[in-house]
Image (cartoon, rainbow, N blue to C red; front, side, top):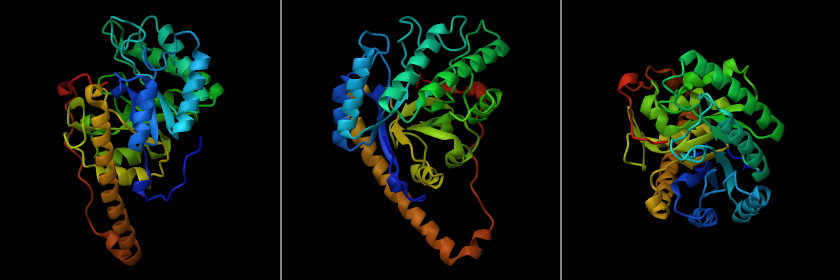
Length: 330
């Protein structure tokens, strides 16, 4: 599945998607149809018990059917692996790569890579997990690096990029942690980053557009939602603190050509309405961003000396890590 070419400063050409974890009460086929009818260009497909369960019989046939459906609807896809209770009905997200028995998680991620390849996915996204209190930090890190290395081998063989997501409260929760992990893995070419725009506002020390710029060459997947400083809660657009036109301009300027998928995992009760509002908001933000980009290009062409004036963006206030609040956004 090819992606369209666009000019580097055309925020309106960003391809917008929506996460199926925000359509948990819909059959997958119905969710895909709703999103296509609304005008989305892609879907972030969370493998889960009700949406392409990777552990039930007939997987090859079911994956092929979903691929045909995506192609018929003109939807690009990324694969997400953040299902809450798929592996353990008692414990959210367990086991992770950090647990004593990480084999079920590794098996799941290897399956996800193969499914992603068969779907023509642009990326397969995953995260570290929360460190179990009984596991020392050094051992948890060793387990994470070893598990990621195994998944990288599978993904490389399948020919699908990996997008590792920094997640608030997890062992790797920020961009700096992602760079450390990438270095520990030996910087494999297929190991990219999934950037959640809301997470940037939640805990990164720099402004959100600067977060985009910092990882521009490694971006393979973008999740987008609103959020407040220090509170990990995925919010509808306009309910948080993020100014989105500069973020969309930063994505366009970075040359990012992947999906920008809305991540609202706790809004399934009103999924079609929320998806419609989200698309309307992002289209409006893209129009504003495009106007700003055009103005920037005009200033660059006609007033280049003025670019040497003093000034710049002011980082947001630093997060007190011990005070980070989580409302279970993941």
